[in-house]
Amino acid sequence: MVWISVRDVMTTHVASVKADTPFKDVAELLVRRGVSAVPVLEEDGRVVGVVSEGDLLRKEEFREEYYGEGYRPRLRARLRRRLAGRAEDGQEKADAATVAELMSAPAVTVAPDVSTVTAAQLMDIHGVKRLVVVDDDGHLIGIVSRRDLLKAYVRDDAELKSWVEEAIPEQARWNDRTGIVVQVQNGIVTLSGFTSTRTEAEAAVHMTKGLGGIVDVRENLVWERDDRLELPLIWDRS
Image 1 (spheres, helix red, strand yellow):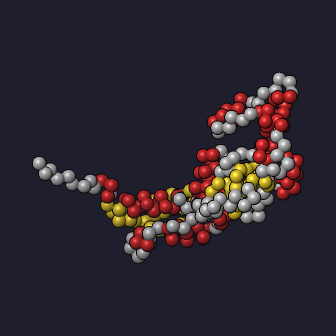
Image 2 (cartoon, rainbow, N blue to C red):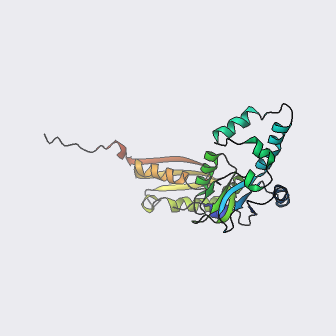
Image 3 (cartoon, one colour):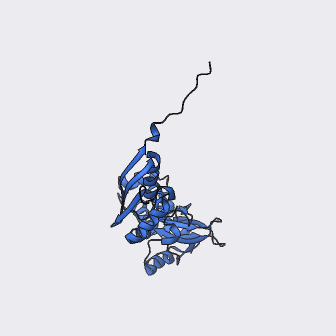
């Protein structure tokens, strides 16, 4: 099956920091590079965490909570941290001076050959805005953000049509008398025509929905036989 992978849309020129990088240096790096987060690497290049502008701002939030008067984080923020399993020590955050004391670990990572659809699902599950892309040994390859995933939707209709046709099994494609006809307009795929069985029609729709860059799938398929209603015979051997 053809799909758009993380490798196709990820950013490869990625700034990174070490666990002992000072707080101020991280802040300056984020501002200078115009990014909201950077991966944290061990000496051998393995990813151990991520430090974001949110982590840096949390230091200031906790500083006010523990040294200010009457401040308490908003209920929504406290619940979000609790659900994410981050029972943080505010005192430590307030005193944090290095990346190791501020970073979120472990990092949420993804392999480069995973589809953009799966990457989007991972972001939703973990409630993050980006994924660190790593190789089989955990070494940094790149970063894929929500904005990067949107690149999948700027593919032209002709390219999407070709990908859908390639994904559909050859025996189900259009020919002189029967088969599936693929049409694409503004990223919306319409499947029409005929298939031998209902299972073939549903498989074509399912595969199309799994391709990256597809805005929506509409189907107008007719099948000759509803094989889902064909139950196997059970012989009574008594």
